[in-house]
Amino acid sequence: MPQGQVVEVPQDGLTTRQRRSRPLLMVHTGEMKGKSTAAFGLALRAWNQGWSIGVFQFVKSAKWKVGEEAAFRALGRLHTETGEGGPVEWHKMGEGWSWARKQGTESDHAAAAVEGWREIRRRIEAQTHQMYVLDEFTYPLKWGWIDVGEVVEVLTARAGRQHVVITGRDAPAPLIEAADLVLRTTKVKHPMDAGQKGQRGIEW
Image (cartoon, rainbow, N blue to C red; front, side):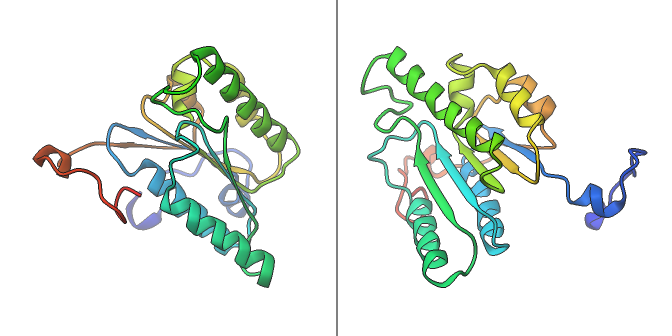
């Protein structure tokens, strides 16, 4: 796709404008950092377009504060006060549970993840947002807590103009197959390889 030009124009009966405006299902997977960061970059662009943003974090503890959350909550307040940008909602699905599984049983975590997905499904069916960020959503899919087939069915059948970006390692094959855009982050070098821990402003 050199210089933003498509390689081949499909014979799908759509005009260039219609094809360009189709909502996207995007997956950011791979072992290296940057998957969520890239997704939040997309959400920033969406906010600037005045779109409604829904962020749903799945495996970060409710106690874990990330810089993006503070920034998007501030942007949400700015929209409420001035009308600039779009509305923002940020949800920690099943607050208090995390990938470390330090609180509650596995069945507790699974139940919380399922309820989180049900809320997202309700919103998609109601066409609540124009941009959904399902952060670290691949993990409850990988662990079998949420049915991958149901997720793919709901996301591919979504109505209206609802963009969805999903982040996390080990994205299941059916989700990758259904997606319009997939990126896989690969580590070349990382400061942790040299014994350096994460730092403010870079990791959070």
